[in-house]
Length: 596
Image 1 (cartoon, rainbow, N blue to C red):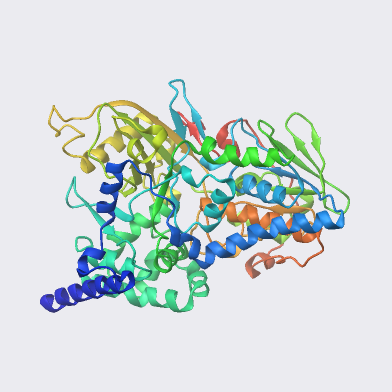
Image 2 (image 1 turned 135 degrees about the vertical axis):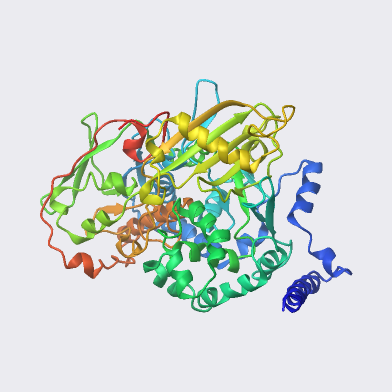
C-alpha cells in the first residue's frame, strides 16, 4: 500500500509539472518549469532586486470587484459635480485602517471629511512608535497576503505598491519533533490555481502523509463546490468539531490547524470558528498568489497610515490626532446631533462614522439606542487578547527568510525583520513574534497577558531555544550563542474580535437603524473577518453607504438581527464611557508591564 501511495504521489507531482510545461510552452524538462520559490529568491537576492506585486493578483475576481468599488467613488464625484452637489460633511472617529480607508474613499467621492483619532499616532492595531533608542515598536506582526484585494487596490491608488517586500511563495513550519529543522510548502512559479497549491501540498512529505492529505478532501470539497455559502454555514462549528464531522485524523489538527488558528485569530482550534480557516483556505486555493506574503518596507504608521492621511488632507479633509470621542449626543428622533471630544468640544456633521473597535463602541452606545436589538447584538462580540514581542540579538541568526509558523504552544508566527523589512535591515537579527494564545479565553492555561515582561520573555526564549538549538539557549556552542541585546513586549488586551463559533450572526452591517450613523471596523459584516483586509473593506463599505444615501440610491440595507437577539427584552442602560487615556483604552497596544 505504501509503495502504491508513493507512486500516486509522484504521479500527481509529475502531472502538475507537465501541466506547467504545457502552460509555459517553452520548457523541455518537465521539472525545470517548477522552480522553487527558494531558487527564485536566491537569484533575486544576488541581484539585489525587490519582487514586484505578483501580476496574477490583479486578474482575480475579488481584485476586479474591489477596483470597481473604488471607481464608484470617483464616478460619484463626477456625478455630484455635474449636479452642483457639494457633498456632505462627515465626522469619523477612529484612526485605524478602517477609519482611514473610509476617509480616503469619502474624499474620492468629494465629501468633506474630518477624522478624529484618540491617540497621538494613527494606525490603531497596526500602529508603531519610536522608543528612546530610536527603534520602532510595533503593535503586531503584520503580513500582507496576495488575497487582500482591497488593500492592493488601495496601495495602487496611493502609488505605494513599491513599499511591499514580497517574500518567496512558500509556507514554512518549524518541525516540532525535530528541533532546529523547518519544512516548507513550496508553490511552483507560473503554475495556476489550484494546481500550484496541490504541488505545494503533495511536494511536502514531512508534515502529512498522503493518506492524511486524502482525508482532508471530503471536508474541503464542499468549500470548492459551494463556495461562500458553505463557508458561512460552518461558523457554528469549531475547527475540531469540523474535523470530527468529516473524520479527519487528529494529526491534521496537530500539524496544520493549530498553527493556522493561532496565526489567523490568536485562538486554539477547539475555540476557533471553522469559517475563519475555510475563508483563508478558499482564497489560497482559488487564487494562485493568494497565499504569497509581503512585508512592509518600514513601520506601518509611516508607510501606510501617513500616505492615507496626506491623501485625505490633499483633498481638503482633516485628520486630527489626540482627540478622543467621549460621548455621542442625540436629537429627539435618535439621530446623532454631535460628537463630544474629551476637551468638551462638540463636533457636528451630516454623517458620523464609528471606526473604533467594537469594545470601545460598546462603551459609547447612547442609552436611547441601548434597547435596540441592532446595537445590543454587538454585546456578543469581544476582542481577543494578543501579545507582540520584538527581540534584538547581538548576531545574525540562521533564520527563515519570511514568515514562519513556529508550531509552538506559546508562539504563533514570527519573522526575522532584519531580513524582511528594509527599514529594520541589519547585520544582527531582530525577531518579531506573536505570543498566542495568551489568555484562558483564547485557550491558554496561563493568563500570560497579566504576567511581567520578564516572565514572557523568558518563556519566549525557551521556545526559541527549540527553534534555534545551535544558536540560542544553554546548549548552543559558546562561539555561536546569540545574546539578547534588547526586548519589548506589547500587550493588546482587546485585539480583533474573537472569532469563536457562532459569532458571525451577531456582526452588524455598516448601515445602522440610525440614518446618519454608520459603522466601520473589521467586526462589521464583510467576508474577510478580523484582518487588515477586513478593516479596509469595512471602511470602504461604510463610505459606500454614505455615498448611496447622498445620491438617493438604494443601499445594501440593514443586516437582519438574529432571532436569538430579537427574542430578548432589553432594558435601557447608560453608556459606560471612556475611562482612562492609555492606548489599551482605545483598543491599541501598550508597551511595558500591563496595569490592571
